[in-house]
Length: 323
Image (cartoon, rainbow, N blue to C red; front, side, top):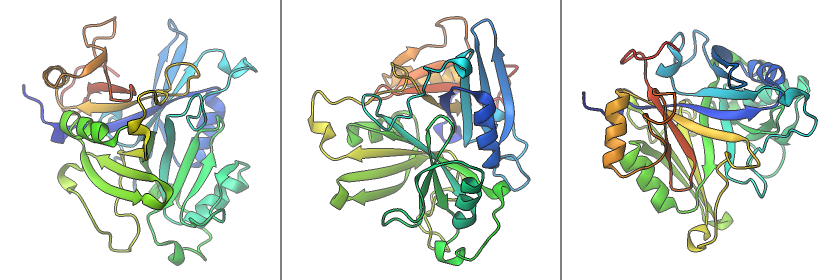
């Protein structure tokens, strides 16, 4: 069977967490639901897969591999009782690389108030700084969770209720050294489409939003004037800070070297064997081939910044694994 990148999905983002009970409580407050759990007691870790699954969700009821906008939380046994354990949130040196995940919401003022009322802290409140249409909440491990609206901010100022069942896990952000190399890799090799570019010359950085739009195509405008991709899931945001590409010694942290935090993004494909053959033909650098180790249904590719990209089978398209 051949492989078609148009059938790929940006399935999930993996974060390591200290205490899964606390993490699940936070993300359930944000409206997410545990849709799968993989227990690996022989290796002393568990994987929790969370997603939006209400009747109003994009992928309600779908198999966990047949979705975009999934969050994987990895818990290594014992960290919850280790006072010295702290996850690296990716936003300070020496561990800077991964930036945040992003949730898009119906009424951002009410959504942020609800998070604050539950006792959670913010890296940036709506009222902080000049950008009054985004906020950053902090999860129990200090990971940044960006909050953006998919309805115009001025139309929700007086709205007091918010419906988490309508929320989306919109995107995950990683910082990249060389945007040309990263954009070429993610578009030509991984098959993503550039959905939107935000240039911020006065502040010295650009943002690139990529995804697999599938049959929906690429929207450049939105009817209500908000971010045209705010209502989508499974987007990858690449942040480029000007000048990093010129520094031969510059390197971002991939989250898997110490100090650890972010682990990987994951792409699901139509035919795993065929997709891996295609990646081979494209000359990718492998962290783990399908044939390596005991897990023959998982591969890992390295991007230009050494971030890990997991590649697995979309089980709706082709049933291969019982997970």
